[in-house]
Each structure stands twice: as C-alpha cells, then as structure tokens.
Amino acid sequence: MKKPLRIAVTGAAGNISYTLLFKLAAGEFLGVDQPIALQLVDIPQGMKALKGVAMELLDCGFPLLAEISLHDNPEEGFKDIDYAFLVGSRPRGPGMERADLMAANAEIFARQGKALNDFANPAVRVLVVGNPCNTNALIAQRNAPDLDSSQFTAMTRLDHNRTIGQLGQKLGVNPMGLTGLVVWGNHSPTMYPGLENAEALGMDVLDQIEDDWYKNTMIPTVQKRGAEIIGARGASSAASAAQAALDHMRDWALGSDDIVSMAVYSDGSYNVPEGLIFSFPCICQFGNWKIVQGMELSDFGVAAVQANVDELQGEMDMVKHLLPESKPAQVKN
Ligand code: NAI
Image 1 (cartoon, rainbow, N blue to C red):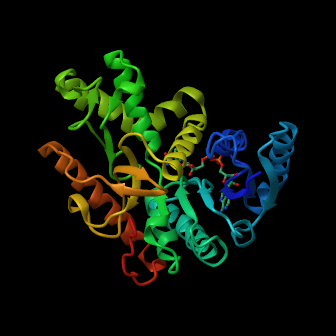
Image 2 (cartoon, rainbow, N blue to C red; image 1 turned 120 degrees about the vertical axis):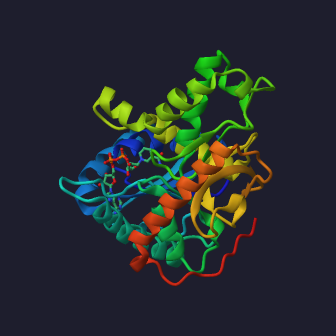
C-alpha cells in the first residue's frame, strides 16, 4: 500500500466541503490506489459541526481514508500537507463594505500563507476557493517567501465548467466534444469566457453561435451564474464548486487532457502584469501547470482581459498593507 498523501481542507465544516470531502475520500482526486490523510480545518466555532462531518466520513468506511484529523488553526492543520484546498473564507456581513471584506480575508490568507510556508511539505500545491479567491491566493503566496509562486492557484474552473455547460446545451454537443475555451481573469462578474479558440467536435464554435447570443446571453449567464443559483436554491453553489475544485486539483496533479482555466501567477503573458493571480489558459503535465501561449484574442477579448487586470489591481490596492515586499518571481514551470 502506498504512503498516504496529506490533504488539508479549510472551511471543512461548510457547504462546499460537505461534497468535496466525500469525493476526496472516495478516490476521485488522486485515484483509487492512493490512500489519503484528511486534515480538516475550520474556525473554533465550526468545530462541533466539523466533528459531525468527520463522523459521517468514518461511517462511509472509505478504504482510502487512512486518517482524519480536526484542527481549529492552520498552523497545526497544514503540518506536512501535500495539497491544500483553501475553501473557508469570511462571508460579507450586514453593512460590510467590499474593502472591509477584502481586508478581513486578507488577514486570514496572510496567516494561512505563513502557515503553509512554515509547516507544509515544501512542494505543497495550493488551491484557493474562498472568495475573493484571486486576491486571497495572491496574499497567501506573498506571505510564503520560501515557496514557489507556481504553488499557489485560485479557482476559475467552475466558471470554465459553467461555460462548457452553456455551450454544450446550446450546440447539443457532449462536454467531451468541447475544447479550447478559456475563462480569463478574475473570479468575479468581470471574468471573460473567451471562445476565440473554442471548438465543438473540431469545428470553430464562433461559427456556430450568433454573436448576440454569445455576448448578451452566454457571457452574462456565466458571469452571474452564482447569483442565479442563490436565487433558485436559496443557497450558494456547493456541489458544482466542489466538483470544480476536484477537477482543478486532479488535472494539476495528474495532467489535463485539454486546455483548462486556472488562476495562476502571471509571468506577464498576454500583457497581464507580472505577479497578479489571473485566470489563463493552462495545460498541466507532470504535476506542473503552464500558461498556453499564442491563443488568439479578439479586440473584444483584449478589452475584457484589460478590465480584469484593472479590477485585480484595484483589489490588490485595497490589501497592499498586508502584502510583504514583492519577492522575485520564481516560476519553475
Ligand atoms: P460556507 O459558509 O458554507 O462555509 C465556509 C466555512 O468556512 C465555514 O464552516 C466557516 O466556519 C469556515 N471558515 C471561515 N473562516 C475560516 C478560516 N479563517 N479558516 C478556516 N475555516 C474558516 O461557505 P461555502 O458555500 O462552503 O463557500 C466557501 C467559499 O467558497 C466562499 O468564500 C464562497 O464565496 C467561495 N466560492 C468560490 C467559488 C469559486 O468558483 N472560486 C465558487 C463557490 C463558492
């Protein structure tokens, strides 16, 4: 039997984790011959509910689940971990301004970045799901000076999968037949689902859909899907977010068959300023991601990418007091 790999999940008592943890334990992440140890992290007030989740995990009798431990702080929870799913974050409270929300989360992710730096396996791979995820990932990365910039990513895979869902339905094509689409930028309503390079069963997607449907129906649907789901379900997307987190990390660890959207450390590609955590077309191989170069962008796309750059720079300005001096870029990929 292989040695268990250690996976930390924060926000482990929350909604997304209530789906994610069971998928991880069932082997949907690293395969059915890889045992795992789950290190579940929540805040002290979440510990009672977290105990209940741990009981349910035990009650499933998962053969791959070698160990479960519960933690109310990241310093213990991140000890020796190989993978981190940073799902927990502070939701917006009544009367809270966006800047206050950014600042509250910045403190959480600064502490988590330091804990990853000091306690995790130095090769740890980190996915930030908790919003605002791009900027939270940036803060964690900047607070982990001994880790490589490429070890920190944020989740735009749900937006990518949502784009696939919309297109598949419109064209009557199975998701497997859709390739080359990219969600660019920030995980926010500004994100840009770009189809310049997308193909359905090998044929250009943009030749098969009306421009009006693309720009005035599909893009806003993907951008506002989170709010639409809250309106319908009375709760935010949880199962689809868990699936997307799993897709992101599985592809990163085991390789992606096609281009996928991942928010990663910008090396200046596509005129995105170096150091922003920005969603790009990525391909994953041998445990590393790489930004795919040379993808076509229309004038509409270039403007949309720039709007995301502006938004992310604005977010960074709001939290700059929590960003240690920039460390040199060290992208190994
Ligand atoms: P939830 O409110 O059900 O659960 C959040 C959990 O995080 C709670 O158990 C809470 O106690 C915990 N938590 C809060 N602060 C923490 C900290 N400092 N350390 C550890 N745990 C902490 O929320 P849900 O639905 O599970 O969503 C989690 C996050 O994911 C939210 O920020 C949400 O906006 C974000 N999200 C991101 C998506 C993306 O595509 N990037 C998609 C959907 C949700």
